[in-house]
Image 1: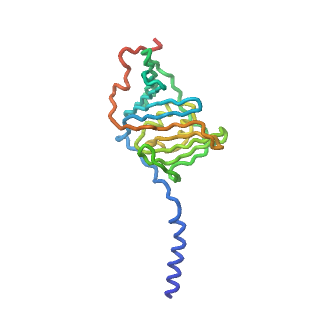
Image 2: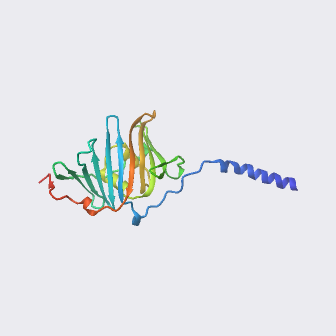
Image 3: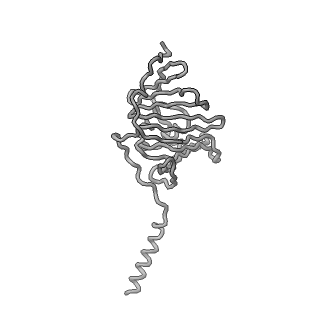
Length: 230
């Protein structure tokens, strides 16, 4: 009787081994808190074949200021202000002290059958970027011979998905990210676009994140600026 008992215990142990040896899944998708939305500045760089451009997101509530820097630090950055609730985009040119209201188009999601998505709770690849634990989400489009790998972090970055929809750009980094479900609160610390043969085409990389109070004046029209259309 004892032999049968020990055999059963040994059998249960053997059955349990594959379970314990499986790679761990990422934790469940975290739910964003609207009361604790990210506020601060996100500096990032866009590296392409021909050039490299530096940008900053300045975020407060449902407003985003996107600043663009060239390689000459002596010049003031140009910037664009996005009001996510009003659905408006306003571009500013610092050197000429002008601003212009940008016409927006309604975002229409592309057919999902063109994409293959590896994201959410089935993701196992992780690494730390800028102090955040990031999970790799991948989106592939065979028709376009492209794949974008996003290393995403969660910190109530609630603005980002709606920002991409309002900006409605055609770059693959934006289009592919918007194919992923349940992304509210997540932000890509690094995204890399490759061909299906793994050749790197371009990358977006966050260089610094600063959480701090942002004054409302950052989203207002500065004194002395005039409307380009008037």
